[in-house]
Amino acid sequence: MFNALVLNRIEDQKATGEVKEISISDLPEGDVLVKIDYSTINYKDSLAITSSSPIIKNFPMVPGIDFAGTVEESSNNNFTTGDKVILNGFGVGEKFWGGLAQKARVNGDFLVKLPEKFTTKQAMAIGTAGYTAMLCVLALEKNGVTPEQGDILVTGATGGVGSVAISILAKLGYQVTASSGRAVHSEYLKSLGAEKVIDRKELSEKGRPLSKEIWAGAIDSVGSYTLANICASMKYGGTVAACGLAQGFDLPATVMPFILRNVTLAGVDSVYCPVKERIVAWDRLAQDLNLEHLDSMISTITLSDVASAASDMLSGKTHGRIIVDVNA
Image 1 (cartoon, one colour):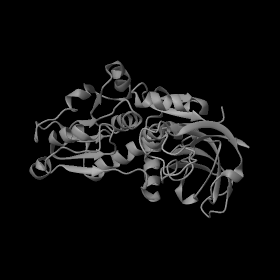
Image 2 (cartoon, rainbow, N blue to C red):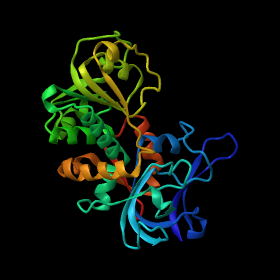
Image 3 (cartoon, rainbow, N blue to C red):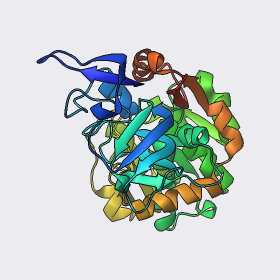
Image 4 (cartoon, helix red, strand yellow):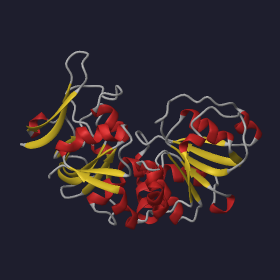
């Protein structure tokens, strides 16, 4: 028997969660059984756990879109007992049972081997948010954005994606401007490498179709008016990597930045990103992330703390990364 956070829903009521003992026979089908060391809480997890959005497709459900641990059993040719592995996305925690448990049985094609540089705790300090941040940096690089071209804007800066993105970009030599709604965390953002911190209100209201050229690149996890205003303020040939919708899923913009300034809006999907690209992202994280910053980004909780932490995240009371020690 082992512990798991299990969500259930009765008819049209909100899902309710309970940490309970379950057995291996309760786990869904899969070709790899993993003993989980750590999971995390991401924005999507918080939406699911609090029933704030219809993220979860099937009940009962063990939430948690990522985890890191050790293979206990495997019939998958790519993994053997004892391998350290990471899982991010692929519908785990939404369609398939996820990582907020002490064990998981999953499709081995969803797994990536843990880079030797990381412990499982460090991997989850990075988690889906940090891996998404790396995909965004790769998108900027793919489109030719270099440090010499000018400032890079990071929105949702105190969140997981934003925090890791700032750290990576700063180490790579970019000048970073962080956008945040919480001035109290300005020193935290500067400690990660941000040169400047601006109030998110500067971007969150309806703006002009085309504004002054400010940024060479941007990583946006907010969407809506914020994303529209970013596109309108990009330098000629700049790229915006869009990976989130914290403000909204609408895009009240015009085509003007794209046809008059050759701006690229690059969508970044971390859920179904091909495994080859995931491996590249994790290898680059091992190379380009300042591991000294991780300690200042993380807070560690237990399975019994997850529900309250999810509510706090949606209320804007958290910053950085929340790690779940599933065995504590």
